[in-house]
Image (tube, rainbow, N blue to C red; front, top):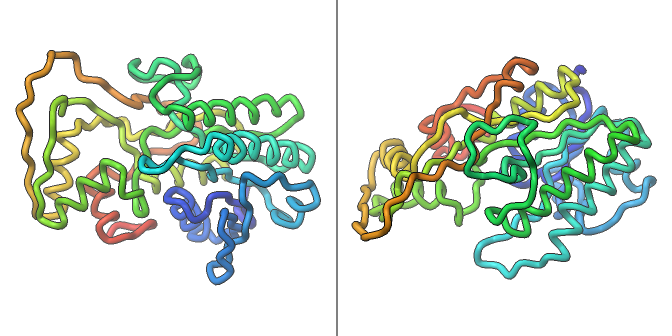
Length: 304
């Protein structure tokens, strides 16, 4: 597929901004939607809690070759969770978009996540690993699982669907309540990053630009399948803090010595991305220090 006109939901979010930039760098015209109507940025409004008719979706995504569905409600740690709104935006909207797309023969790329895998402590999940509800993501995680299930069920109606399951995404625009943003902000401000055990728990962080590049490859190759997208590198909490201090050039780390029962370090979002490498000819291009540097310079498309 030559990328000419692509629809994008969730365009104002952290990942959506990176995807939009990547598409535009390819010369594509992006019909961007968000829960907010930002005309100055050419972003159209679609509140995902609202059900749109076929005619309304025809007008919104007129002439698109595909729709990348990134939009979702992600609860903030300080907010009261509105389960009804989360269900409508993260599950019902998938049905709304999926029905329309299957009728109009418009492919959908759905950004799901590693959170849908049932046994989160297992290592190197492949795309066929068991999926199911787990406590890690709470109601939000369950909604992503349901959204993915809704769309995959519509493949029986000949929906062309690609499901993207990234590990833990970070990048410019990441919310301030997230660990990476918190560590990096403290380092930049020459503050002490205080850590408490366990500091050896590990997470696979993937930069939003690398996820965006994988999605571009899916569209170009018209690969309607499920793909894990990860960096392939598990980083401990301590190593992340150290990287933030090194990239910022200031700040320090203090590990509080708290007596606790010893346990084996937990590994989160350990994914096998071989399928994406082999089928899409995709590789992650950013290591954690390059990605953090992009966050410092607030860039989404290149390293300063």
